[in-house]
Image (cartoon, rainbow, N blue to C red; front, side, top):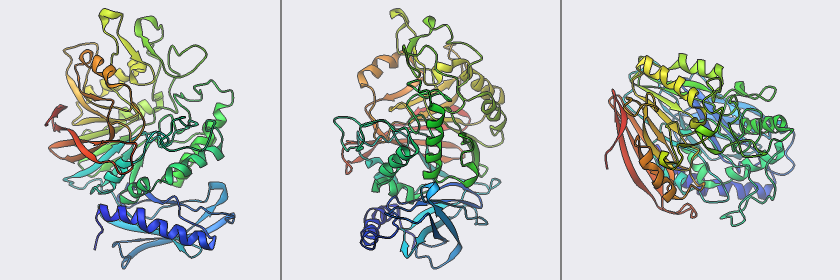
Length: 505
């Protein structure tokens, strides 16, 4: 029998704590932080866990097994990994030679203790005729300001994949009026700090259940390192920021279901790449932090973002500036699929132009940390989309703690320019958004934006088929409560060959 997603939730929230209690009584390694899978391809995926516990040996043998059924009667792959202290006792197992487009179950064992089981799956063969892809996008799960009711809801869905587009952890010390404490009074800066912050976030049983329910594709944003950082410049212009970033990248690799091959080298780590979901779609994953130029016109004595009038910022339209770095820009231009009906561009933030000030009141005014702060680079990207006449170009993002649904124009400087792509920028799992009335005042200035809600927490669920993409905004009633109701918000559809979302309720 295959467990449904609600049974997965019960497994993650009930069975795992029982294992923890038993493990602690024996003072042996535990699986307190759950299990995860990710980076699925047609022949395999990455299986992840981390051992915790007092006085762990420097090296621990960890056995893993993967089966075609949840009872593990038909085990098709197994192996042994060595969890070492230098990698925080994390495990990145990589089974291969699996069947494409099928469901599997996996678990780990170490020193007599067994983890809970998780569900994963392989991607379809790149040449397969695929009729459906069920996935979601999520981002921004700040610990101290809310709970993860959204993940409880997501864990019950029949998903092929979760696409997480950044801000898995937050480096802040924590809010004074915290919903739940971070237990620190200073910002995260060192490798030990980052490891502790992942330990905190991954201790949440609802997040664990979501990881155990489906494979994840992940990219980072800024808070995995430092708010608003750009390349090797921190927001506070820290003199040792390169070392801080290297520590953050190391901890990120350790705690994500990523392959050994992308482990950081000399403080750098490539996370951008692509995955074909059969003949249905190409998924393109971007990195808009590691290679970007610093933001223009920052606040005095600071790095990072600002909200500025473009006319008062001399470098705002400098064509040499880049958000992705020229190498990644070139890679993206060459890797769009022209023979699949859909291209899903998973990146960090809002791509559509968003003007915050009426021209009659001195505007326009733009936020410099997102694509608006790198307008010529955005135009280069959109020019490629237009020139290639890409079918079904859909931009997926997060970062801004609001649900935005928009039609992306070929040229935002021309009001009558054609819509060439669709955008779904999902809100946060828990992180707080702007005041809704501020967004309401700006929406009339941005008629290409069909939906803008900064007062919603949650994620976006998608069903992709050859002829259409359906999107449902899943909205948490109260992110301060782990048992909050989660409801269907607005719903949209994108028809194949017709760029731009259409509201359907």
